[in-house]
Length: 128
Image (cartoon, rainbow, N blue to C red):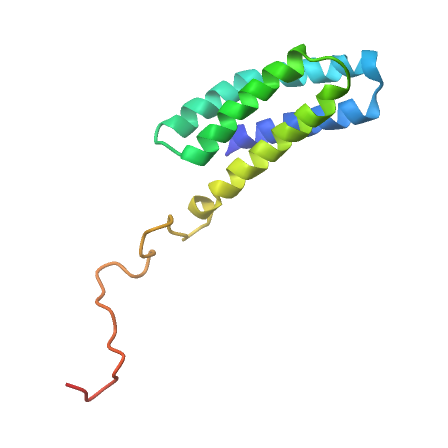
């Protein structure tokens, strides 16, 4: 989760820098953000690959590719690239959100309080 927060922060800083600054000065903000996205994104790929989390892994791979593009791209393309980094990290966080809730169960499980119990009968007492 910390890696995802760092990637989101780097994307937001790159987005704000590309919007607020003119073209020659904006590279001073987006280049370090691109390097941070590449390095931290590699760690996020490793964290999402073992154990396999498909959607966050795809978002992490896309974020690293966008980080390379943010580093080498010049001009007005930096704004949509930085915005795409933010969107990828928000999508990855949303996909892993059910596992992060306290007391929440991963999708497909019966929940923390339902293990070992048999289902209740719908007919009520005295039936049978």
